[in-house]
Length: 126
Image (cartoon, rainbow, N blue to C red):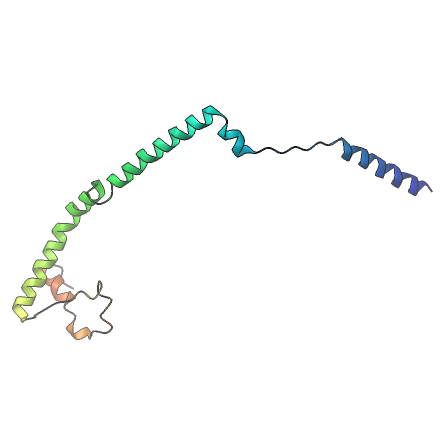
């Protein structure tokens, strides 16, 4: 009997505690649309985002990174081109293809690979 009374008392206390709780919902989107300072802050963020996007685009082709890459890489590429051209003239090659950048070359015999000779022309003996 004591267990039943305690269980019943516990159930009544839980019911009273549950009925004392209140719940509510808000529509944050609706609220934000009606707060002028939110609209001003949002506009500032959009302007900042556009400015940063322009800065990122300025570092793209024709930007500083592109110019720096050209400054550093062009002399090396020119030296390689001149070494390949000289080797081609000396050996009588009609064409020299770049295996690394051509997906169309499925197989090439290692005997026709002149990479080490180009390196030697550049002064980097193997």
